[in-house]
Length: 445
Image (tube, rainbow, N blue to C red; front, side):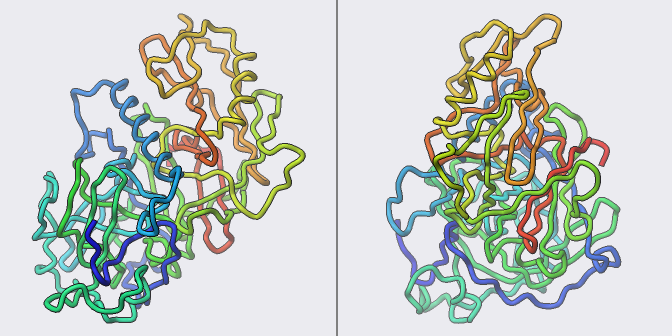
């Protein structure tokens, strides 16, 4: 792969320095410190990825395989070189999208919301090799607030992961970024300051000037992917850049996947998770400064508790489980899963059948009366017990076949996926360094 001098490679493993955050331009709602935007599921009719010919089973099948891709990238088996991101994400792997506007005058675009990414980037004109979109590309030449970041500026130098200090080309003094995805896709372009405007669910809007964005103009993708809204905790993410104005808080509520309801992504005061039933667990350090790691202590099947860590092993300061909005399934290290599955089997009195695909380890024939007898499973994070509904832990993977949505993976590889997060209001507080869970009917928010 060609290496450009002063190319910014957005490695999710590296702590990126925070760019200068200049004054906010906020509506009355924004001045109160909180706003909410709508989350759009990729299979919703509002999504550009909606395919009316796809059956629900096909949609689930695709989501399961995207999950496998993500776990393979969050936890790679080896580091090929210093130039390989630890936590690459497969192009087109997100589960939810959001609308936002960029530039002045505002130009509406969409991007995949991703807690596993650290940059807001989108396709821009002119763009070599960019994929087709149902909407026009953003043209930075038509925005009065688009300001390329100079390659010799302190902002660009603060983001460099390479040692070179000169521009990659004498004829181009712009700061460059590059993202390499595991499927061979890439996004490359200019890093710039730009105004991002969000339309709140209340009908008002809130604008943030001079946020760093990636303007993709030399793209290579194997799928129809047109941008990402990075919500990771690294220095270049949307959350960190908006940080002081939203008190470094955001939350989301994901309805049951078959629900017709919409979802919300909340910021600031709107993102506070509190009240009866709320439990909180500390955010822990992990192998990436961008990703959100928690400490899993064990899981219970009904009243039977299974420890994640043996009594002979002491807990340390590092998290062992990644919580991710873009991964559908929940993955547990295979040595722990080997203790979990037998207990689940012992409490379910259904006919076991072969998995319709290799993804699942445990499947049953659906009962004719829909009385599955599936036990409640409780996830024991440090200081927080999260009870999973049977509709989240067993899903109809094929006609008359239900499968366990927790699957084994070689260590280290535990991920708490979005099926397990459904019908919980989940709040991230980067100041208190906590993640909070509150049982919620997300269709009524």
